[in-house]
Figure 1 (spheres, rainbow, N blue to C red):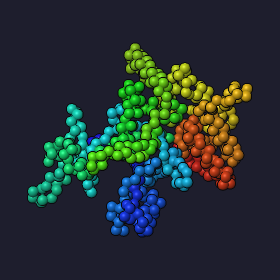
Figure 2 (tube, rainbow, N blue to C red):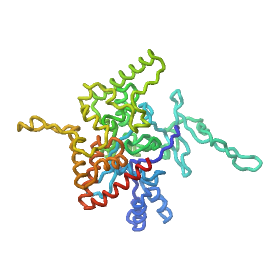
Figure 3 (cartoon, rainbow, N blue to C red):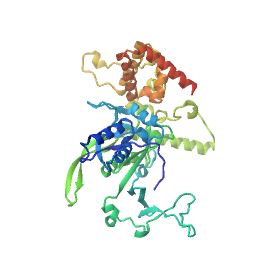
Figure 4 (cartoon, rainbow, N blue to C red):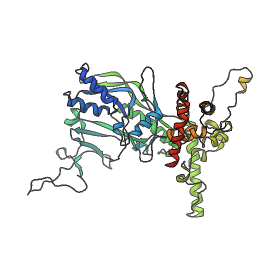
Length: 458
């Protein structure tokens, strides 16, 4: 079982009070108060147990994901995730995480979703399954610590206890004949590892735990389809997407699944399942992979001819604070014209929002609209350009220098925010709120202080 440390969890479900205590005012008050504090269901469970309500919570599926501050060593990371991608929908006043982008920790399709059978007891994990190199599944456990015969005390083992085969079943993982599995104490669990672009740093690896076979089976199909186009692995430079639009997005879909009851009969049941979108057309993905392959082969051929020569045509990423290679670096212009912005707008997308009108890409009106014919649907480039123009206009209306706001927005929404529709919309919403609540002067002063702090600590 691979040991990888994460700095937080994005959980696909919630927990609710059992029916037996769901109407108890004291239990309800504890439940609501702990969630209000941001302590999540771990905090709810502890406080309920102190009050005499033991094992009072049961899992429940919802359309959104749970992000709790107490599950992050740096609680502000949970805040940044919700600030960047949280939404308020319908009558629900709470901002929740319904959909977010992800960059996978592993590149191989076989490793991105890697689960195992796991049995937990009160002290933590007790048994788990692993696969040997020959494909055999075995049952593992921690080796029991030796006992000192003289003192009869447990001997401290340097480096921690070793992982060993479970002795009572000779290490054979046989779920059909396993008492823990049949008693539902052992089940297959998965953890999807990744980073949320625009929010996470290199050390901010997140885990998305799930026990849903249907969710992971669907995700595997999407990943394998993309990987088959990319030669078996999905490089990060392809996962990063084009013009700040990541390739993979995670959300939830309502679907009917088949359940087998205790009598062995199948029943259909509706459920919110984790859904993975590959937000790109297949033809464009194939063109991108082909462009990368040609560029990689050309670089290898050059090295073979010129020897081990270090050639740095661009400033190192550590200096520019931007990827040294992007999709646009390798794509042929004919490919870029399919879905991506022109060279002029590409240059703009590598900058933050400017203060002058010349920094806003001009939206070219469709000739049909001028002639009175029905206008075509605006392209993503046109919508991004329109959002930029709106943001600049709101800055002027508030009396805030757009360059100052750009520096603030880069820290809040991440590099390249001015090239992404989602972050531009968030920025516009913030500026509109300032006007709506009439605190432009205070906002301008706060913005100056924030940017000055950023520059001092840079």
